[in-house]
Image (cartoon, rainbow, N blue to C red; front, side, top):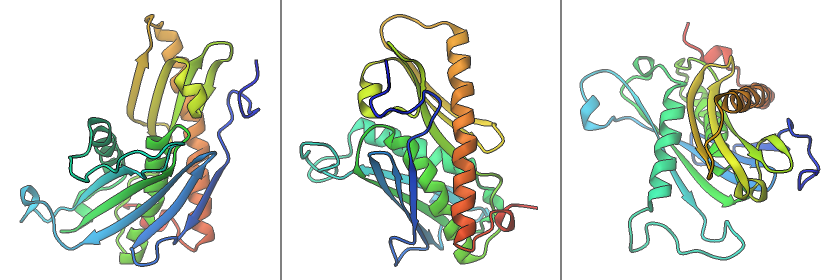
Length: 245
């Protein structure tokens, strides 16, 4: 049984990154992974949260929102007359944790970098696209303020066990909605794991299945990290120049 878009099981969706899409910000990228499109914008503020004041340490945080028409039918906008829903809060915390793993906060100084991830079109993998695109926006912001604070590239992708297909990388919505197991894997370019989120729908799954899916996810993340590095280099930004010595 072929995948809905004809990809091989170990193939990522086509990725496109348009850097500098949002001109007023310190760093931005319009990130497309197949049918999912996320605008990731990095903003730098010369202040930190109260719990970090006086510690000469910076902070990286993330925010995440779905555009009302990111899906086939318009939905009510989060935050208009009600707080962000639980899913939104959970994803933006994940984005923040993932991107903080990429940064040595002691090298950032008393600054906060906020990565706003606005999902314009959703076809599965919006949180992983937000992290992967968010890292590019973060790197652009660090280059703009000339701060060397990166530890390593961070990216993310999804993996699932889909009935009739087996282990599949970078699920679109149709696949995700019928996956027996669904993982979101966040890791560095060298395969160090930042976070794994996973759920078995219905029956429990064997450990070896999870291991195989994590391995597939890490292989995809290595390819995404290369794309991040290449697109930044094409824009004149060297990740090596932003790495902590």
